[in-house]
Image (cartoon, rainbow, N blue to C red; front, side):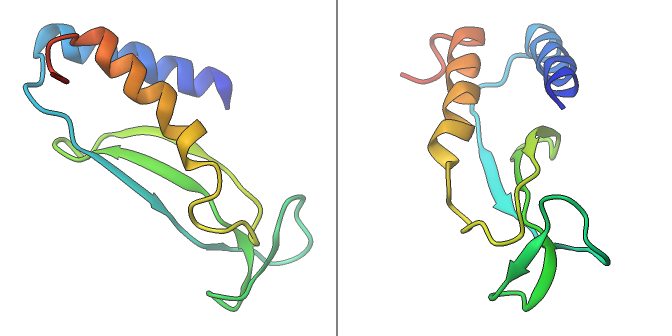
Length: 102
């Protein structure tokens, strides 16, 4: 998964160099992926009333591009670890466009 994230970061940097964004909008969401059987990391989610995974996904709100994703156990609360998840992305975007966050 780390290698995919690194490739995605490189692509985002290239896009920002070619066409720098004036604004950044991040769309952070979680989802329920129902599973069958006993896959590692699946668990029951009372909100969805199913067994599966509960990944956290970050999209560029302007382009719809997926910026980052992490697979989580099914019983993880929606906002668990969102600060540590999105923090590095915000820092990366600030480095790519230092004047854009003023």
